[in-house]
Amino acid sequence: FYFLRYCWSKVFRMVNVDQVIPELCFPRLDDTLLFRKKASEMDSELKRLKDRLHTLHSGFRKYRECINSFCNGHAVFVTAISDFFSSPEGKTCSGDIQVSSLIASMRHVTKDLEQLKFKIDEEAEQVTFDWLEGVIPSARDSYKQFERTSQDMEDAQLKYLSLKKTAKKEAMDRAANDLSAAKVFAEEARFEVARRLEFARSKQNWWFLQLFLDNLEIHQRALTSGVQSLESVYPTIEEGRQRLAFLKDTEREIKRLLEDEIVRFSAQASNLATTSVTATTATTSIINNRLSSGGNMGHNPGCYFAASNAYLNNNSLPKGASGDCLVRDGSTAASISEGGG
Image (tube, rainbow, N blue to C red; front, side):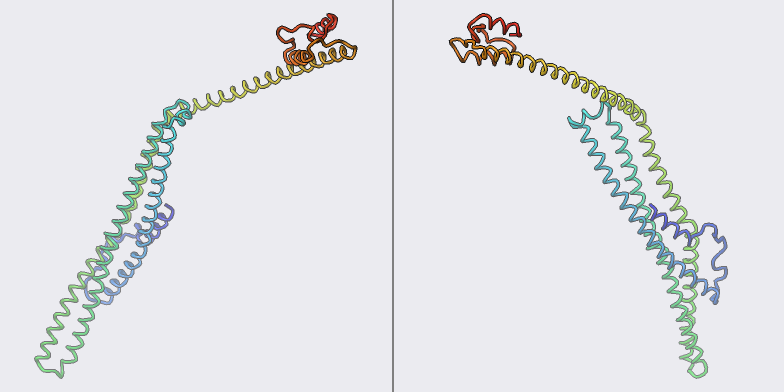
C-alpha cells in the first residue's frame, strides 16, 4: 500500500491539478519554431509520464499480489478455525457460544478484500489500455510522423530551390509538385500532432485524479463493509466475553477445591500412617517381651507369623484364631488384648 501511495505521488507531481491549463497548448497552428518547441516539450513530458506509469502499474501489480496472498491466507485461517470449532474436540472449547456467526463475519471480510483485488486489477488494466497502449504511443507516434514530414518538406523545398535557376521546366514542375505534396503531408501531420498532444494533456488533467478518487472509494467501501460485518457480531462478542469471565472464575474455583481436597487427603493419610506406626510398635514390643520371658508359642509355630502379620495389617487376629495361637497361657492373650490386640 505504501509503495502504491509512493507511485501515486510520483504521478501527481507530473499531473498537478492546481496547474490545469484551460487555454489551448497550441494557440496557433502555424509551422513556427514556437510550435515545434512546444510539441517537442510535450513529447518529452509524455516520455517521462510513461516511465512514471510503468512504476505505477508495477505498484498496482505488487499491491494486487499482496491482497491476493492475504485473501488466500485469510481464507485458510478462517477455514482452520471453522474446522476446529466444528470438530467434536473443538465443540467443548467454544464455551457454549455460537461461533458460526463470528466465522461468517470473518468470511465476509475475505469477500470484501477479494472485491478490492478485482477493482485493483481493473484499474491496472485501465492504466495499461488507456495510456501505456493508447494515448501515449498514439501521441508520440504522431510527433514522430510530424518530424518526418517536416523534414521531408524541408528537403523538398531545398531541392526545389536548388533546381530553380538551372533545371528544366519539367524538373522544376516535378520538384514543385513534390514540394506541394510534402507541405500537405507536413500540414496534416502538424494538425494531427497538435490534436493528439492537446488531447493527451487535457485527459491527463482529470483522468488520473478520477482513477485515484475511484481507488480511494473502492478502499472505503471494502473496509467499511468489513467493519460493518464485524460490528454486526459485536453482541455475540460481548456475550462471549461475559461467558469467558464466568469460565475463568469457574476454573479458579475448581483449582481451589482441588487444592483443598489434596490438603485434606494428605492430612488424613498422615494421621493414618502415624496410627499404624504406633500400633505396630506397641504390638511388636509386647510380643518380644513375651518371647524373652519364655512364653510358649503353642503347637503351630507358623500361627505366630500369620497372627502377627494380620494384626500388623488390620489390628486384628486372623479369622478363627485365638490368643492361644500366639501363646498358650491366657495371661499373654490378655496382655495382647490390653495392648490393643
